[in-house]
Amino acid sequence: MRHSDRSWGVMLGFLGILSTYTAYNFISAHMHNSVESKNVVQLAPAQVLSVNSVGNSTSASKLILNNLQTKNANSTQDFSVVQEQLVSITKWNASLPFSMTRPDWCPARNSGGGRFVLNVYNDARNRHRTDCLNIQRIGARGDGGKNICVDNIRHSDCVVYSLGSRLDFTFENDMVARFGCLVHTFDCTVGVPDASKIPMHVHFHPWCVGGKDGKRVISSDLGHQGENGQYYSLQTIKQKLGHADIDILKMDIERHEFSVFNTLERASAPLQIAFETHLHNAYGLFGRPVSFNEWNSMWEKLSSMGYGVFAYEPNIHCFCCCEFSVLRGKSSS
Image 1 (cartoon, rainbow, N blue to C red):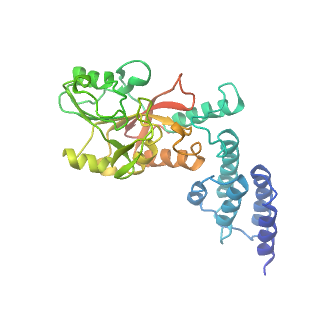
Image 2: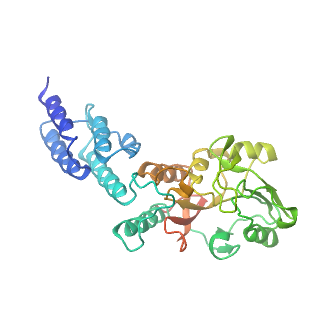
Image 3: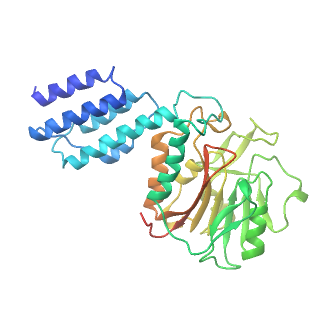
């Protein structure tokens, strides 16, 4: 057995008692020693990002170390990625712990965890910023409306999908009145509403949108909590309605936005998306807060498809919720 192999074995044994932050410092020292002795290891940054902090921070550290145990590291620059990821996972787990299973739990606004949440929002905006010359508020102030880039909206030739309405159609009404768009609204959490509650120019569908087709338990604050709702993927709905492209996708769907983003395809992705993110255990249906991996994977997917943030605003009524508006094009990051 080589000396470097024995070193890794000893270090992995210590992980049972080391916190992630301690492991980070220990890994750092070991990696520098390995570089100096030419017994270098290979880092796979993409694998590091794939670590899902479902378990404790020691497990996350062990997974990352396992990814390092291959040959021929490229540079110490690669090692710094591991260091950064370990610290990020530690901070995330401390502020949004998986052990906190209470429905809708969120760190207090003025706590260390609350400041961390605000930094998460700011960092997403700053890393993926893009420009829009003309941003307009469409719909009501607060949850009902969204910030939309109107630079290139084609009047009377635009398709809008609105996911999640709670029977608030101010966004839809504005899109029709100001731009003449064809608007379809989807919401399986409101039952089958009376036709008198739906504007004549809005096409309403009692479906929800998620990662795959099927029926599942829904979240609702309009008297339908715990019922089964019909979910379809975005691709299935576009096929049903005969739409090849969507100009604007608006979402407020209580953390199902992550599933929708996972299904986006580059060739048919919307030109812009206005959505609310949810870091908490929304309605108790997810069993835990959002993980470090889930959050980063969402933004990596959006960035890889050319989306950049042109507007964002934390929700004043839901601290673990934040509104983002993204536009396809070259990001400024």
